[in-house]
Length: 214
Length: 294
Image (tube, rainbow over all chains, first blue to last red; front, side):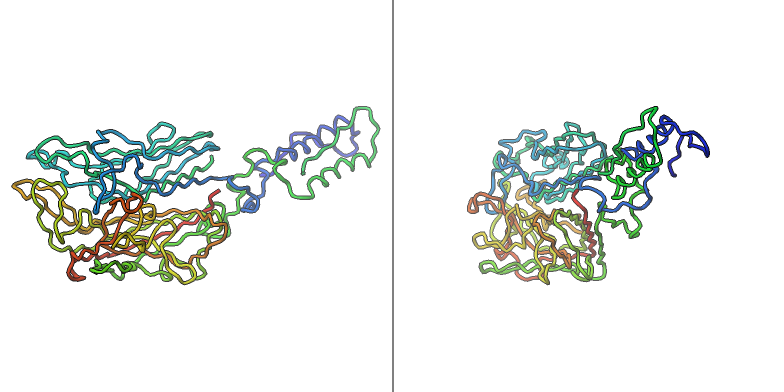
């Protein structure tokens, strides 16, 4: 819809005064000097050549995410270095952190994918009940301290988790973390998990963050 | 600059037609070249002002630049576990779906510098045939003897692309052609465009010793993905995408490769013929999204 003016136009044979002219002219001038709005823009006109980089969104990609080297032990001829119960007693472990600056209000899309290996040998070994002590791994992603993804417990030996979420964000900086937890050491029965066998490792991780501005 | 800069008439000033025309000429001079951000109000460009009429697929180059997909259900593909008792030749790679006939375009995908590409796939497993497992002795948690399968045997499905008629693993992914002692394989840092398909698992059973039992997985489906930002500074023309499969691999970290984890090809001769260990895929779907990264 074209702009309409609320200022009276000069009629034929009117005496034009400076104030009258200024009032009409300045209304036109102010519209062009920073007042052109969406009602005055031509439709279906702007393509990529008119738009600056980053006007709609941004992308942050982190690659080669794998288990922290500080946790990696117990490897061998047929095993990875990984989490051992000597160092892990349960709970969530932070395994990746990144800070992203220059964000604006909008919606963020996050994706994290990887593959993992979970030692399932003594999984379910809990006395006479095979379901006790099922070995599992679980994943978490936090955004500025708030949890945005919490996976279910995964109970396969080789897994390929793919986690996605979309949530609103405010402008500014953001700190994003990826965490995991695994079943703690079993202590029931004769086939206890030992302290030095590699129980869990993950690799091939990629974290994709696409914020789209409001 | 497209701003109109002039002063207003002062009350009591005598003006003529030239003075008035000059005011309007100021508008013409300022706006003869294209309007710019100095003319527009904040949030002045809304969705209706964007040119989204050039295509019907959403590939307007505003954010999305290209996309393609391919579904291959017609030809189940079987991958066989390689057996070679000699010091590792390169593993035999089996393509799962076709390249130029698959998720590609005749003129190829052109990845401009800083473009983001996102590839997603789903592979449906039809069956896995495994050599019979061997019971393990009591007491040891992870014992393996002789030619029984290694602790964590796994098939790997990974992504390749075709550039200048040559197929190769995509950036961040290996074709398992590095050497680790007597095995061929890859470091973990080179396994970013693949999924792992377990061949068999060794599970502690309930009952009298020996308790270890090998179990195999059938009819699994596997979802994989890969992301890449072209940081080479030059355009890359990709004429094909495909998935490939090979096995059986197993983990390794015996301290001989700078203490880095690796996945290596099994060549200890635990399979006596190609038919002993087979994975067959019934269908594969592959999708490609190409976006601006800003």
